[in-house]
Length: 256
Image: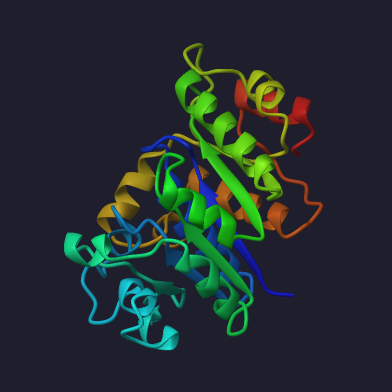
């Protein structure tokens, strides 16, 4: 059965788009038909991340009734399909965000999995992406303001009767300045889907316009995005976690 995941954060700059790109790429590599949609219509980044900042037909054209859904889907060199949004401010100003809901229904007829990157915050745009989704995935960093905003996103999802699949913690270093994974889990009260370590490979993958799972497949970040993807798919997998405190925390939480 086709499914739409909305990737939300509550706070900007936590790695939401990077996570959408890498989850979509991983799912594609695992044999699933996937489309990554840039539902962040105000400040779109999917096309920028994957080297297609400007395309002739965008999600905006589809939502405005100017183009067919299929015409706004592009295949990245990695094989992953994407639907970029327009960088034009004028084109985003005319958008009725709630049309994302009908778009999601149509997309489920032509693909298996949709990852919809959403706008930061909890405004009208993010709420429309949440309403369009079957399940919500929350992305946060291990610091108090990001986790607090993630909690707000979770509470909003509950008010909208949208199931939260869980949270992905990015840029984790295991240092004293980070919130502990145990505290984050206690505060958010949703499953931890994955813990992505701070990794220079991610910045390099942005420069290379591709997912880190392809540019640096042996990196720690790539390894944990793959693990996270397989856990979202329901696999009961075992793996050798990173060394040190990060390893111990994973074992304690039963993520191994």
